[in-house]
Amino acid sequence: MDYLRAHSLTAALDAKSKVSWKMANDSLSLIVEEAGSACMLDVLNPYFRDLYSADAAETYSKAYGFILAEIEKYRNQESKECLKLLTKYQSLKTYFDAHHGGWA
Image (cartoon, rainbow, N blue to C red; front, top):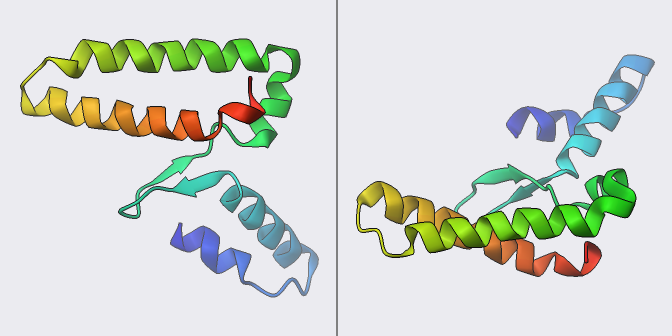
């Protein structure tokens, strides 16, 4: 992230720096930061939705169904690792719920 941020602020004076600036900014637009400064690829970004085109709703639905199944799988588990996975899938569900409109 530091590398991308640094290049996104670079003055685009020549062809090489223009390409570096553009790629850094494009890359940053596809990354979302979670609370606590964790970063992830913004898989529900309109860029990716447009790539799926007519299959976007089905793709979203399959992914969301997988997330719900994993939450159910780990819901009644008590191991530290399972609780960690449950928390991650619940966070992912929140992310999917917030971006549902563009995919359904």
